[in-house]
Length: 115
Length: 115
Image (cartoon, rainbow over all chains, first blue to last red; front, side, top):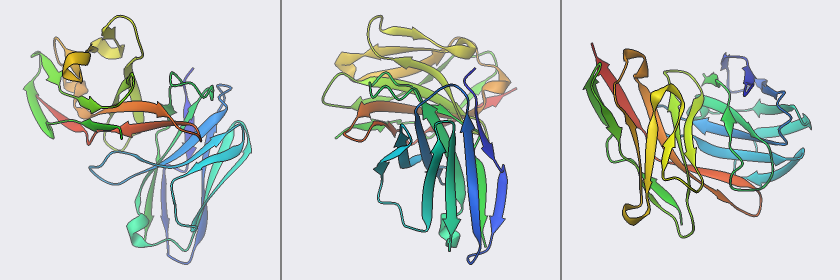
């Protein structure tokens, strides 16, 4: 089973709202990732968690705040977003071996619209 | 620095026809290469991957890809396309940094299938 689940599927929020995106996997993976994907563009890496610790932050604005409460769960907290933050947010996970063969498996994404 | 080029932004094929999607990479070390497919509004699904060994790699849904080091290419092929193959296809190169495992994606190729 290579399933990564994400909730909600769609989210509409105002610029003053606070919301969270959730990602879950039960494959025993120890690395989890957040990507942002604008329309007609490839995914762009935002954050990487390895063994529940933040290991990569690709200079993402602080209005995006990741959290990894346990090895199965990854959250992305959103606050004071801008309309240009509207995108598909993808979560991925991998075994976390640190080896290049560590394949990433993606969830279906959350479509975020910021008004 | 690593990079991936997908020269074809759009490709249209007739159902039942053969398909080849091109991917060229630039990477200083041994490349680790992936093909992902994304249906509209969905996440990325792994089609196949190449790490080492046999340069012809078989994937899911009848896809295969051939690694050619001399041409820095990793083209995706399918002998007979089905209408359900219409989607966006991303080639990616994987590499390890100090913080973890990263993917660099190409810009994608949009496949349209004519019935």
